[in-house]
Image (cartoon, rainbow, N blue to C red; front, side, top):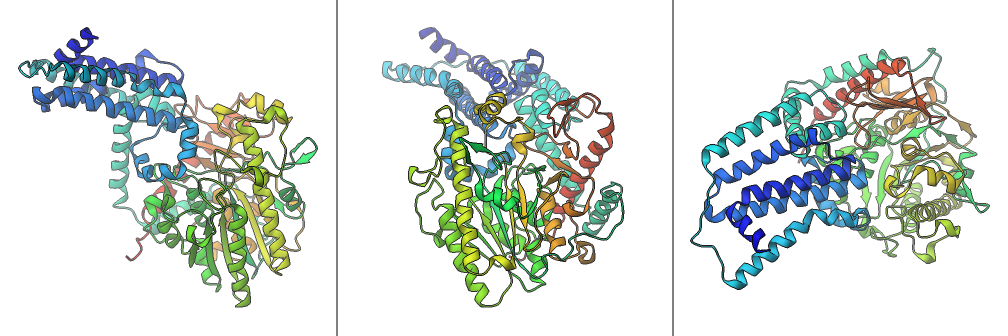
Length: 624
């Protein structure tokens, strides 16, 4: 211990460099499953630059303190990023800091994502603090002793570090896959590269034009063969004049539909609804950093999430073309319901941006302490039904959006609310907890539907039900084990990102739509059923009406690297680019060896998402 104390006193630069590099190696092991010495050089260069700056700007008296704080800060960043990766499956950039105020709201989910090994990032700090306390007790303050590195050597080290870091960033500048980019550049260089890229995009957009961008998007989409023929639109106006209720189900994947355990259906309500509705079994999430709030944004606007920031946070100050605004022209009242505080994910900005007339949040509901968010789905629907009946009495058509929360991670349902009994093999597992939560969510939806029928609203209402994003965490649910437990073929990407979309239109009956779709397609599909022509309205949509296309391609980013897409046949995930990417058949979930036929789809979706990003950045800001 004395030796460590002396070493730290004489050369904090060297000791802290070694400690931080050990943590960088640990981070790579956690995230990339290997230390990769050649790539670790990029980390070393960035750390060297950072420490050289501290060495040059800090007096001898404060060096120990400054280097100690740097070590602590980087330890915390690497720890948080590891936990973030464990939950989201991607390496965060500095833009994730915008979501720090949300952490307390999802602390149970965050806590469940932490592994004991993650605390290895802090072991050295505990030792150093102990050494410091021992020194204080002994009265050894080292006041008269100063040791400064020779400035010439520090400058040389800083220049070398900058050159090496610059080399790594230049070599990785063409990589669209964020995970590959982070792995290649190193954690700190990746943050700098993200900032440089954001600055370039912001500078480029200053000279942009919204109308030109919309025209470019329309022109690009015209090059893709979404339809084989120019036949008249099917189902146009099938729900014209009807009320619209959209239910966004929290963490709801598609596989529980029609699934039974021990002879008992997991989702009996949704199963019955599928038998009398349009059902889209090959429908996928497309959310970005904003998760549930991004799904709300997309389903109402048909604009891709930007990926680098929650859309509610980044663009909540805009006037967003949306379904509520279109329906307002038809004299609809638009309300949205969520049992959490409206400031969660900046929904207090999101809802005005989307043009909702009114929102109902936490104070509107009785807290029955279902989970960390508060009220149960049953309470959500109880209040919602009261408000909708009031609008019915005023003879006002309405658009109502319900954001459920009872199936939120970590999927703990109070015992008195559980509706099913799990097989012994699934008890005390995340899969078992998830199925229990999903079953309750289905049960509560059933009670809501019963209430709509009893109130006379059902026959005059189009009901849209979809999942916002995945529920099962890959680290807790090996796909082979899940497949064995449930008797299905479960894939960690295709099955995980596959969410349901069900649209019930009174009098239309059942139809299974086999084509692929994504959350950007909800708004155009709903608009078609309501008899609203987006073309006639001059509305720019980046999705398509799923009832009237023969082919589709939808992009995904954040949970998969930029450039990933689903089309009617495959899921494609790029490597450094297209050529080293992988494709999986959506039906068999087997790897496709020849990916060459999908090059055009890859190029197309990259350009479409770029135009979507430009479009939303150019939207006008709302008046204060």
